[in-house]
Structures are given as C-alpha cells and as structure tokens.
Image (cartoon, rainbow over all chains, first blue to last red; front, side):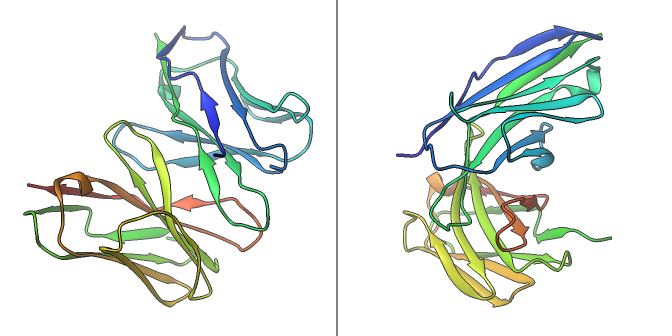
Length: 112
Length: 112
C-alpha cells in the first residue's frame, strides 16, 4: 500500500515565525512531489511542486526534497495569519499512472 | 476565467436516490479526476480519465459511474445513494504526464 504520512497537527506558530511541515512517503519510485493548501471549506490549491533533490524557493515558501530519506518538507517563512490552513502533501504513484497519493494533511494555525 | 468548475455546489438528497455531479475545465488539460474527501478530510482518488478513456478506477462501489463525453468534461453519477456517500467530491484536471493537478470548488453531498 503506497502511503504518504504527515503529522496531523495542529501546528501552531506565532506570526512572523517559520512554519515547518513534514511528509514522508513509502514508494521509492515516486518522482513528483506537491504541496497543496486547503482553507476550511475550500478546495485544495497547488502551491509548490518539486521534482529534484534539494530546495526550491517561491516567495515565502521553500520545498525541500530528500529522495534517499523519502522525505519532503515545506517551510513557510514570515508566517502570516492568512497562512492558517491545512497543508496536504501529495506524491505521484509511479509506473506511468497519473495517480497522486495524498497525505491526511497538517493543520497550521498562525497566531497574530 | 480559466478554471475547473463543478455543479452543483451543494447536493442534499435522501437515501436510495440517484444523483449526478458535473465538472468542466477550460484549462486545455486532457486528464480529469474525481476525488472524495471524507469528514476526516482525507482526499482519495476515485477515477481518472485521459482523453475520454478511463485510466484510474480505484476500489469504488459500482454504484458510482463516471462518464467523460469529451476531454473538457467529466461527470459522476451515483445510484442508490447511501449515508456513507456523504462527503465533498472534488473534480481535478491536469495535462497528461504533468502530475500537477488543479481542483474544482467541490460538491458537498449530504445523504439523509
């Protein structure tokens, strides 16, 4: 069973701090990794994708990938109350399938 | 607006009824998906179509039948609705091979 694991949280950080969200995956053949943000009552929104080992930065967001450790993380710098949401990690299921496997999400609360 | 759209947004119905949900995307993508998000917020793939061809068919009761009349449209028909079918159903789309999936606003189905 292909799995994607995330700490369910909730994770609470003060405004301006760095929020660190972590995800591990079980299938070594996975090549594509994504972070989605889901506000309460809304749909998942793609915020980061990463395909190679190392860091990828986009504004206040940095995705980190370590394929050897089967670990992907999302750092949010200068966290804002508007970042409060559930963050879903998604990993492709290898073998030519279009399938993404989602983690159960980490709920982040940024306190003003 | 370029987007993935779904109708209806809310659907309240009684057990045993049959209902349909419709999805349309104007992103020019050729792959579309149906996901179910349960009360615990776990997002799980149900079906996927690529250019009108079914490519992902997860373990879903055969009361659920997807249909894709063309690559921009994907419908989901559910027969003999049960209480456990209550969930939010999301449509998503991607370009084949990309794995980056974009979600519609969701349809909240409540079976009473």
